[in-house]
Length: 158
Image (cartoon, rainbow, N blue to C red; front, side, top):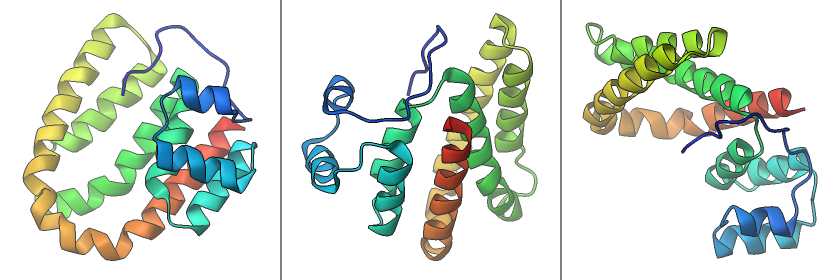
């Protein structure tokens, strides 16, 4: 997902117009309408209760500023890197991508963004190769990790 180049204010209340402008899927849009929870935190909480983590992640990143988006991405990646490096101890591509993203967060320059994009592409390649190994192990811990990441996201949007 692309992040906006110019700063924007974090979104705390979600409206029909916001969801339409961001092309929410029809099923997720109906779910949002049924919940009648315009506050982001209330709706994300309901998504967690109903195991709609994908919709919660989709929405929360669209409500964040660029800086919050970077913080959220780094946090989420850090939740997964230990499992990846346990299976692939010599492969440091994911850690390198996290470090590059952290550098952008500290010093957002063209050079740092370019390095972070390159590291992210490399990490994506590593993740694809590890996906089948991690799939069965991830299913049991996935809910807890998704909830932890979403709760962190809510703390930085507020």
